[in-house]
Length: 352
Image (cartoon, rainbow, N blue to C red; front, top):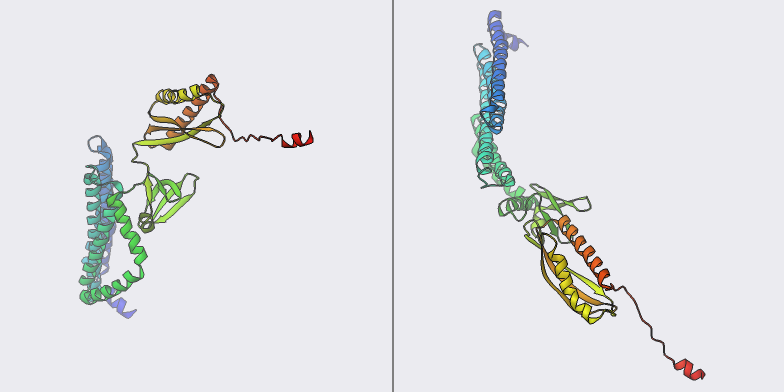
């Protein structure tokens, strides 16, 4: 308590009042100035794009405003005399704040360059921009913290040696996590799939909703969320339907054995005509393929433009209904499971 009184007594009340006025007045004035600057940028949307205005406003809020408030605080108390220990404390505080704001400035600059140049030039996708930003920001924070510790008087070389030994042990203990992390970057740069793609992974199928650092989340057709680790996902057999230009459709129909051969010969032309009248389809073939247990089986193949599953189902429904109507007109009957039993007359002969 005596030491605190001794420190405070080094300045007059007048000096404290002046510093307090500078702090409060400077803060109020700075707040007023930043308010008008932000207001000017909001009104300048007619001349500048909204994205640029948002980036400038973000930079003002994240960098300029904190730096301005700290500068006013530093100026107001720098003129006071508190002794060597307090001056060192202010010095360390200045280093910490400037380092933090420097890291934030570099991170914002990199994010701006990636999102406004490479993304717009279509050199990088949105996911790649997020992944590269994450890597770069991690390195910026690491080097920023090392710079800060060095300026605060810590022995950085000794610390780095310890981190290197600990890093090897940590890497061995987190092999699975690192494998998923490398899998994340492999997905970003190799692009086997992206968010919104429809995938079939082994016996699972769904739409990719999120690609994370460790896991990828897929929304199945039933509605539940499927979560795969990135490494396991890349080691699986993946079918990606989003890049499919045409969907091949193969289906069978069966008609009764009582169908005359003449009508059986006409069926392929009927099917070809039906499919040819439907938009975004391409007929391939229709053949009387084999004799079934209770039916004559015809195999039909055609193609649908695009990969949309709902579109495929809509077209297949039209094809099925058209075939049903055409067969009814021609008197062709679809087969259903039947069994004919032939009874011997041996018992009747014995009775006679």
